[in-house]
Image (tube, rainbow, N blue to C red):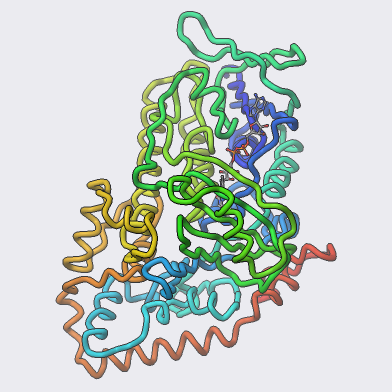
Length: 510
Ligand SMILES: Cc1cc2nc3c(=O)[nH]c(=O)nc-3n(C[C@H](O)[C@H](O)[C@H](O)COP(=O)(O)OP(=O)(O)OC[C@H]3O[C@@H](n4cnc5c(N)ncnc54)[C@H](O)[C@@H]3O)c2cc1C
């Protein structure tokens, strides 16, 4: 058998430690050896607090105990995202992590809802989403495993302290075989012929050689961007926010959803954790100055600020390829989207899970590299279009950023989706990349795009039966939600970070 692949990861933020943990957990040591270099002096971004449900698959795949992870990261559950003032000032909708309508009804539900609306039904589509209603009522329970029941048709993600999550990953990765080196990279040595990266030279003089280098160096993109010169595709004309102020505040109601409130030059997040509330204002420096943005954020807090706001600068876009020569970028080194749909940590996990089956031998087959780059391009493009959708569909005209976004031309891949839905309520589906039919539906309808037509299938049911079905369904959701535990109580029993104690088995909470 050939020698194992020597993998060197540069960076110990969320991306670096998630990559290290996954590699030592999913690939046998006979296939690869993992070394991670990080610099405490440089530090990490560490502000990612909201996640997408796919993170559960990642955690399960690497064998994480959920309650233990939640205790270690002060985590809470997340059933979706509430968008306030996005469609117009005063509007409110939830992008839930679960379907609208009964589990067995599939795509026909929203067509029937559109028909019922024309017949005079007044209820919002949110009222037919179990996850949205549980979120609004601050309730939580694990989804029922029998697929036919109303409380089976949802999933969940987490709010957690990203800094603690990367520490938690580190404590898994090291005992499983990842070797950490503290130090700052001074020089990157390349092969004079091929241009491949051969080694990293640290300020201490130590040289770390490898076969495959994973660039998790954050916005610096030290290996892929700076050393290999891979270009940057800028998407800021569609997603103009380029700054964020982040500030923690005292713990508030532990609502199981992220709140995103549209503001005068961007939007503001509110993320409840067990020990504090995370807040931030994502804004465009072209539409507001920094001092005003910081003051606006502080004015809007529901609880007392625990520190001064911290400024983070970014540009939306991605590297033209994520894998070049013998270097793969994961995390911020590969690209960045504002956290509107909590997609950065998802992109880290997507890159890792796509890399593992494509892991090369010591000599890299370019077909593996091409396939990885294709898959990452799809991931980036799907998220880009979905984020732009939120801005494009807003009908606000009270601030320059909203007028700019309403007037901007969007990518053809997105305008096609919008027009298809506008005309016939059909949502283009795809296999690769993020965002299901439910996600698209909730933003289309939530932001006020009501289609001109619905599917003729929806006409098969008699009118009175259709309305009765909606009433019944809404009542059933309300009844089931009322039976659930309050989210804060659920956290206390299952994974309270304070005081530390033995976890309650998930089954005991059923
Ligand atoms: C305002 C904002 C809000 C966000 N909110 C969310 C969210 O809600 N949800 C979400 O999923 N994501 C969010 N993110 C993104 C998330 O924070 C990052 O995707 C995630 O933390 C991954 O970061 P990273 O590991 O790629 O980079 P970093 O955390 O920057 O880590 C970089 C690492 O590289 C090391 N390094 C760099 N240069 C050198 C060198 N020369 N020598 C040695 N080591 C070096 C550093 O020491 C560090 O360990 C947000 C980001 C921002 C900016």
